[in-house]
Length: 118
Image 1 (cartoon, rainbow, N blue to C red):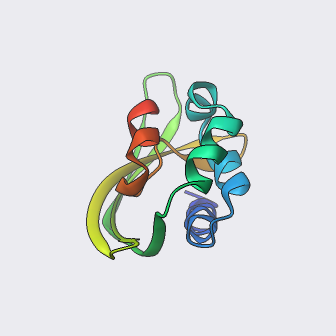
Image 2 (cartoon, rainbow, N blue to C red):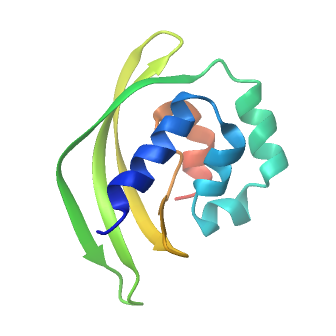
């Protein structure tokens, strides 16, 4: 799990600060194959969505796929704007190129991308 907490925090801080180019780069390879950076940036820049706050709930579980890839599963509580809706989501993180990357957008406000990357 080395490096997981800093990578996860960096991703959510970038979401909170709406650093969209960085959040795109932090997503896993499958997501980036399915959604071009141009499409992603157009969708998020036109959105009123915002990450107000998040909390990672215990337990954090580490698993290993049959192909040997290591994954970490988290359950998160998200507070999303513009109306401060609270939601929960399970996020699977995969170690790719030395960086922990989420399997979906995470917060439910960007559900289009969550559906594409599952």
